[in-house]
Length: 296
Image (cartoon, rainbow, N blue to C red; front, side, top):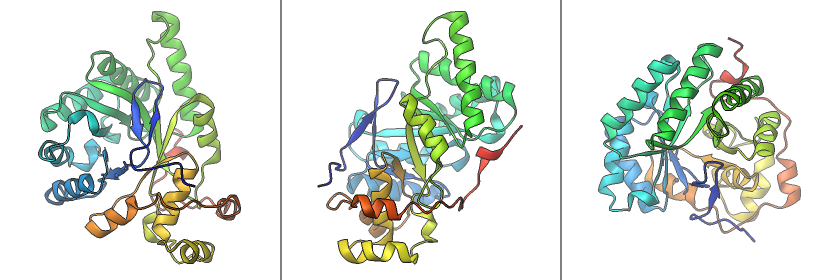
């Protein structure tokens, strides 16, 4: 039977642990707060905490870090039990710009540390990407950020970063280049990204999946209906379960209390090997942006 529960965590290369269900803005689940208005964010994050979520996925570009932090403080939960993520905005790539964004995160949230900081997208060119990474490494070594990683990188971007980390270590010693603890991408049965996932899993990089329920656009797919009927679950729950069984960290997003609760109710059933196989669609169909293909 299901080996996961809402308290399950994975250990990252940084040595810290990450809850396997995120709230995009909130779920441990994790909750993802993309496009969640600031005046709504605090309420939905607080509700996510009540539902058991302990992982909040935010970003500088979402403009809701402050209400996320307010919810964290008002929840009564120990800071150590909550996993908070932010991201370098695509328009602020480069060493100096990234240092400024990190500073702004702390100014707006009042947090003592951030659990995970990602580069949001691989834009700006090689020099800017490397500069942003160096700024994250420095903030990690200063104790401001516990774990670092990337989002929306293609395999060619990942290879480039791996080479840069090796270059830094050749100059300043092992560990000086940082480690890619987490990578975040749109991943679901209609966009499995096997090349990227395999790259990460080979190296022990945790893969987070945003849009795990495909923004509801695939709920009517015939392949889902037998599982919906068999387990008495919604299409969203089946898709989140698929993510968990793939070893991913899904980041479902909702501003509706009942759906936040529903998205966390995925631990009392398990998809069979045949059912998992049936969800291998072979399609490449993003429902959001796709910076992985950028070549600048």
